[in-house]
Length: 119
Image 1 (cartoon, rainbow, N blue to C red):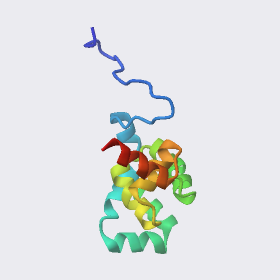
Image 2 (image 1 turned 45 degrees about the horizontal axis):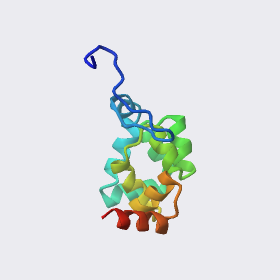
Image 3 (image 1 turned 90 degrees about the vertical axis):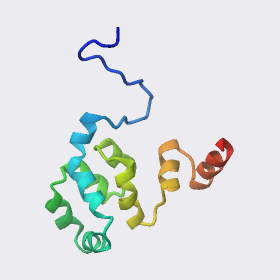
Image 4 (image 1 turned 45 degrees about the vertical axis):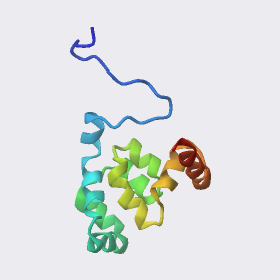
């Protein structure tokens, strides 16, 4: 029944961007750039010349706008993988809990309390 070619296995979760193969292709350049932020010299290079860095990695306009706006949710919608985006967010002092709060509409503190309540 679910073996049909073209069947969409995703569950529709309103407000959620599913990171699948299509999104991985869309976000390849962005995720490659963020992966390279594992090295301090690359983070420093980005901070010194954000526009040049985005051109170097071939980001599209949607991704560039989200970077300029520091819009992590926009980066996810533009194909960003949260595991790679964590390095980008860290450049600007955002933690994974900050991003989790953004994704859920909670403050960072509310999100941390939510996580603690699930343990």
